[in-house]
Length: 204
Ligand SMILES: Cc1cc2nc3c(=O)[nH]c(=O)nc-3n(C[C@H](O)[C@H](O)[C@H](O)COP(=O)(O)O)c2cc1C
Image 1 (cartoon, rainbow, N blue to C red):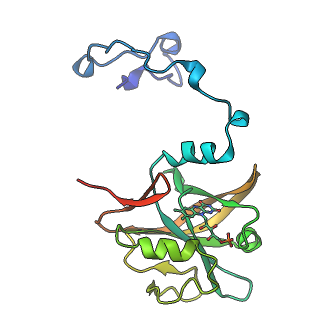
Image 2 (cartoon, protein in one colour):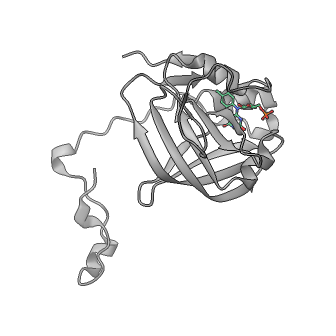
């Protein structure tokens, strides 16, 4: 933890600019010795990794699971399972997620002005599978929160975000969307987790 007053000040405290952040004594702990367990040479550049190995490396990062929805040009609901969701900023409240550019939903999300995010509960893995499938009717049998004229929300999810799309960026083979959170809620409950390409539950 760093002292707050070690940050640069607007005026009258120029010396602070050059001072290194000091550790608060009450939180200071002896440093553990750094032990190298893996040689850096064991790291492989991505071009030498086959795509399965790269995917496996990415998949070691455990995430929550969301369903992201919008309305298409006819007002019909569309959505997909996404674990690329993440928070970006508190003030203003911004979130991000990314979509494969060869997704069948790419054009719809590019044209959309708004979208919604439902963070799935631990027992909603069947919904995650349904929204990741190529089934034409992904909403079949899925309970929704009533949101007339707006992007649908999955009922019993542990959090919901209604967002205005403020930017999209083509990044590699994905489109990165930035949304401003217009309304949000959250409920207590265990989150669905995706890790090593499997749906899991958090224990504890
Ligand atoms: C756990 C999980 C997370 C996923 N996350 C994303 C994601 O963040 N972005 C994405 O484009 N596809 C993601 N997918 C794949 C899409 O859900 C899937 O490709 C899509 O629903 C298939 O429809 P499409 O062919 O129209 O894209 C994910 C799938 C799963 C199972």
